Image (cartoon, rainbow over all chains, first blue to last red; front, side, top):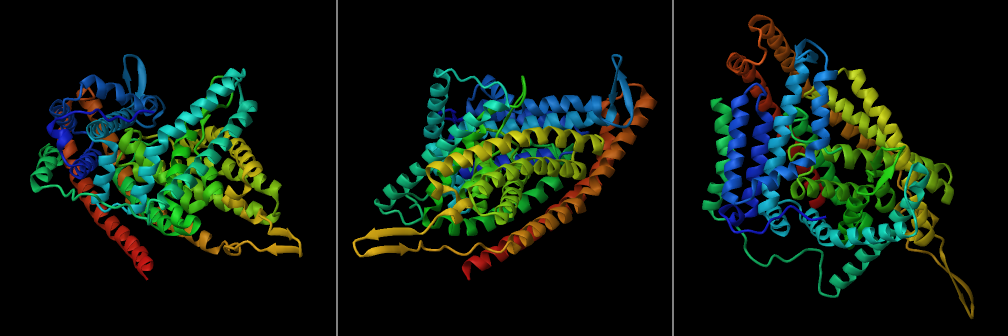
Length: 245
Length: 331
């Protein structure tokens, strides 16, 4: 599975990862805290994100395509007006719940803005840099290390799983119902043993190279004030919109 | 099942975030005793395994398929605290690197998919393996633990939804829908978990954390006779009390914080519905944006203030929990 990162060189790409991380999380918080009646606010949030997209030179289609992640919840959101309770209105002959329509709009708008913001973050920040940024923000070292190892070996583990799938299917395996699940489970068991044993080998290899339980930081990656100021634009604009609207 | 932004009200999201942060902080401390200095690489690889295994779709019935949640499986294979860490990292990576699951909903996702399945799964597994301490009980325990952990997680979702969901759906309908579907998913999860654990037991029984009691002492047959080498006994099976106390504490905090804030949200919901109904009757077109803007402001202020107060209190509580944990680590 490929991450969302798109190599590039734009002001957004160059921004220190910790600044971007804080900015995007604050933005998401402001969006979620916005009362859903303020249509204009959501429109302005979307415009702000569009501006960031342009500035980062990320193709709009790229962001839109990745929005598909939220599809299951879109389906759920679209169902709410039909199954919701309370006051009902007729829209083109179909009886819909008013509160349900509000809820659907609320979920769609906020989820879409949130997902778009995190797509932009992931598209403009290298995974490794994002982890270093989180480390600068005092996320516990152990969590960072676990995430680092996970990202580093994810592709390897997924490849092993893919090879098992090819092996199963080349022997005529097609899962139809729950009766075939044990075969998949045995693959999962084998995958766990392989992952765990790989972890043991990695750990020993690292010990022999002087690993003491913490990763050395190689460079001072403090972000200059200017970068913080630039990153602050996103949440500041969003909260300004929230208060003005 | 990754919850996106905006699905729950901000106070519920923040409350769950505080609970998640506290649980992860406790797990960080306890995971070191499950994995010693190998914690980072091993947990990282296990996290990658869980990420992969969550992509393993299993067919439930003709047409539909579910995927493994893996919380209970991870708890049995590597221990409950490491499992919470691994699944939490998986969820954080999915949120930040794959834009899957809302950033503000990360706490909710961690509570629903990491903490509840691991804690419930491990607790049930312990109860079953206490009855009989053999291989069969490990496998049966895995099945029951995974089977029950999924509907419990789904019901927790329903409870959170009733407390602070943003959609007006009948409580009964939410519980029925979530519970019904997830009992089916739970059967698949239980079956796969049990067979996975049994296949790992067959090849490397030492890797199954929940089945460490099966390891027999090593017998050396030398020229001078037989010599029994007792394995370094980690510790006698810990009493269940800390686990239970911990779960109750988490539940209380969750219920306390979440329900405290939740009382404000249905009010907002009902008010909007009333405003809407009134407007719809009066002006004939329901979504007149400008007329609504006034109502939004009027309704928005108390909600905003409540939100701010909520944030402050939650941060205080969260800070206190994290601080106490840090104190203990330092001591």
